[in-house]
Image (cartoon, rainbow, N blue to C red; front, side, top):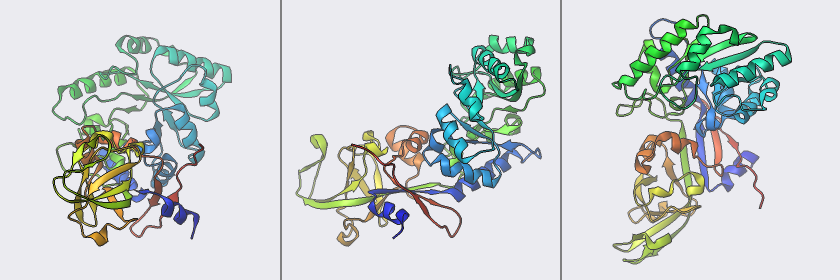
Length: 389
């Protein structure tokens, strides 16, 4: 048996990532941006390890599909992605931290500059290395997190010389409520961003994130910037999901037992049986990103049977009520579907009272990760990282 097979065989839970589905989602988003006949480019946001799916596999797959530009949040994410994408532009959204300028230059990464201090530091770096450096300017049009505020943006408009020595690769802003088409802040942000783009001619612009793509052509500008939708998260809450599902998560049954009526299960006795019950324990817990708040409020699928999660989610284990499932289907080692056709990340997020972004980015590092690609996929496995005591 190969090393990949061994890793899967030894794992308590297996996360399968469909690279072909991610590629198809990227194509669909790109084509949505081009529906009006413009040749708009479509980037990919790979922050948080490609939303938990593995940037080292997703990045090269999207590059092979034709994606030419990539975004991450942190410098270290950019350095890691550069190892597998030696040529493509990689933009770091969190910007330029003090004393990291040389790291950006060494790894050919482009900072998204969020205020004049970062701009000044990056321009000084270009002078120090005696060559022009790419720069992205982030304008805050209403999010009020990162980006040039209105006063600093006006300074930049009035004093274009502050960009001397830099190549302005992109102007961008971030939508506050793009998943709410009727929210008036979308149009307000669009107006503010348009005004800045007009005042800074010559540079490409980017405003639309995943949901923003579906707000229409006015929001598309030159570069689409999808993240969540690439990974199957619904960009249109309350409507049918236009994206293909990307991940399947299954956990193994470790043990089953029979308990009498009025017995408790798990920490704190938070669930009590109302009848004689068969309980199965599966290899999954909050250390794997299965939220503790899911106590008594969600379900899983076992051999086509919907099965209730009972008791508290613990660090490494979850208990389920398998009383109605035939015993031969509940053998030790049987796989229980946690995420998949019967439970999307959006569904689980609703149960956990959070959003699908948190569900995806919390996906645990202890899973064996299997990557499939294509209609008749050849699977490859990433082993869980080694740990030391």
